[in-house]
Image 1: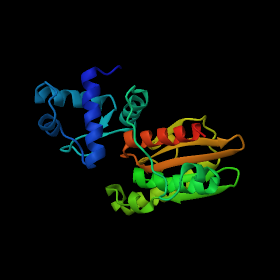
Image 2: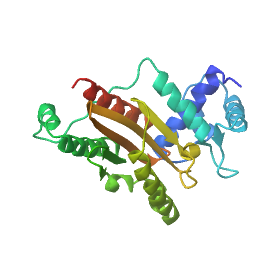
Image 3: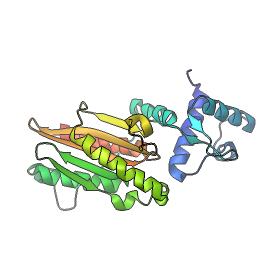
Amino acid sequence: MELSPRQKNILDMVIRDYIESARPVSSQYLEKRYDFGICPATIRNEMQKLTDLGYLCQPHTSAGRVPTDKGYRLFVDSLIDSPSRLVVSLDLEAGQTIDQEFEDLFRLANSLTRSLAQASSSLVLGYLRREDVLLKEGWEDLLQNPEFAEKEIIGDFIDYLSYLEDNVKHYKGEPGLGIDIGLESRFPKAQEFAALTFICQPSEDEEVVLSIVGPKRMAYERNIALTDQVIKLFENF
């Protein structure tokens, strides 16, 4: 069933607010914060329809709604298809120019991995395929997310990370961006996580796989913009 423009707008606002706050979003909250031009009862009805259609879920009977994998997928696809995608800049380590970095692929991959981790506040994997070297940066910022207050979530993430480390080594995606949200990855402990993975080729015989990993409630718009910047960086060299 195709969502109406109003339903898409409400879903977009719910997801953006949940990403920002990490708290379930209620119809009362939406009505106070945004001017949808409709009455509160209509907002409640539309959120219920989005829940019935599988785009939102209600963790507790009296709580607000949170996005499902299906909801995030529609949101992410709309970001990718948007003609006015967010543009961000990515700074490499201080004191290094991009020309200097490209003289040493390991140094470049290390700098990109660290810079992406800082800019995304996520864990970033960087894999140099020819050298068979795996880099990891960003643990400190990642663990500040409220999802990781639960020991069970940390345990699931460690298992998911082991899966991803193997995945990036065998990643065969086309140049561009691959996004796995929750159980789209088919890994049973990935329910609360997401990964944005892409391949860069600085030369014909060199390949770098980068993956931004974090909670499913990650800042997709910013992270997609960061991957755009890195892909463009490699296309220019």
